[in-house]
Length: 193
Image (cartoon, rainbow, N blue to C red; front, top):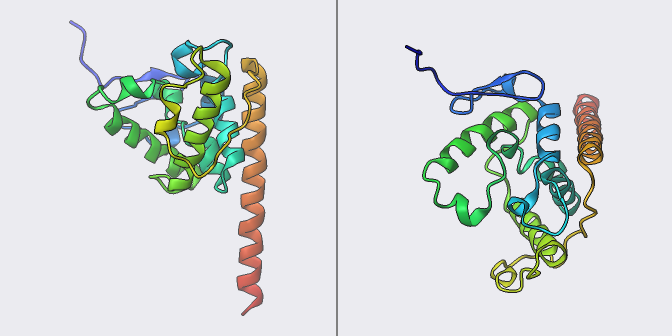
């Protein structure tokens, strides 16, 4: 008889990721970049391979909150990119996604839930992707998404290795900028004393 244990997945780096009870220690940026760069948007029903990693880079470029933009879909590294029309019918998916995103936010130091500006950038990018990659160009549904940002970034359809490299590069740049801002803020607070 096999013992029933809590389910987990093994990540690209060999980490056991316990998705029902994730912790920040289980979260690894290389695993996120690897997985997202190998997952195709729109359930793969598009004219060219276009990864969640490239989508995330583009959302980050459209956002003022760069880190949150880059990592807005990071839970999909562990739970997969499920198209929204399907996701709404998976009864406990949102609860599991929330737990995973909280662990990711704790690991990388941002607030979750994400600010509304990220959803706007995400939806603007979604509309642009539909225009370039879907057979219908999204003409039957993209107007359902009201966005402040009118045009997203044209998909380049990067191969997975390049998307991963660019995702990790953007993460490092954002991290260095945040470290620099934190150092500058600390310096200003010390110099006031």
